[in-house]
Amino acid sequence: MARRGKPGGRGRSGAGVVEVPKGTAPDGPVEGVYYIDTGDCELIADQDNSTGWLLKINGVMSSHIDLADPLFLDFEYMRWMAALIESRWPPAAAGAASAGTAHKLRGLHLGGGACSMARYFSAAYPDARQVVVELDGKLADYVRGWFDLPKAPLLRIRVGEARAVTETLTEHTRDFIIRDVFAGAFTPRPLTTAEFTAHAKRVLAPGGLYVANSGDAPDLKNAREDAATIAAAFKYTVIIADPAMLKGRRYGNMVMAGSDVPFGDDPQLRRRLLGGAVPAHLWDDAQVRAFAAGAPVRHDLPAPTPTAG
Image (cartoon, rainbow, N blue to C red):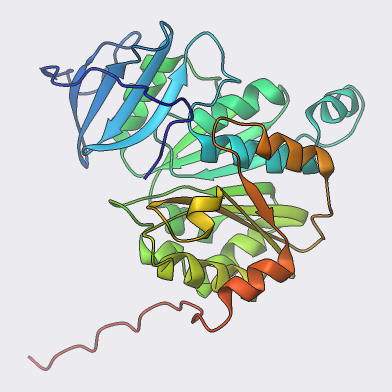
């Protein structure tokens, strides 16, 4: 579902399959299709950027990395997420505070891919502590080898299923949680329900942000249900998307967020969202709830009833 921020950007495809011995990881990126635990991934050199790399997972565009600039985010929805989080915790202020005894920003990323967002926040907040939850262990090994990510404890990659890992985490231990998990065009249902969202809310510290990448078709049914579920869990919400997406004119991504404290009206954030290659609008809590009105809150499906043997 991800769209790149630069119009006309294309990578090469059709590279051969690269087989790497089990237990090893490549030393730097090499174009090719790689077998991973959940299928395959393709690493493609970015023809528009000599230090850029694109990652497809099972045929779907997943991530972009600029080896020379971790603060460059090619996908617009990632830039919107970064802008929202930085609006609450300005990097300069966080950096000044970290010289003393102030706490370090703590992030949880559900869905790893190339770790683009985690790499970005490691550069923006050098003292941040982040955990990336990635289902595919072989992909995690590749990404570590390809992209020279910060080491633990600054950035840890935890292999596991996102919901199962979230349910094990201690309450009030993360400042932000980013949900960016897809199976095809949509997030798996267990990561979109009221029960899961309650676990995410429990893990967040007071004032924390739950940020979700919600992909949808023009009918916006999935987005409305996502918004209704997040709005039921959090007192304050926002949505960020481009006007065409908000009006149901295309397939794409909306960034949704919930918090227990108000987002406020940050003119600098609105200007930053409008200033990108794909200008975005920000809907406040009242607009989000109006958008979600009438949509059902998602719940976990009942466990199947055992059949008599």
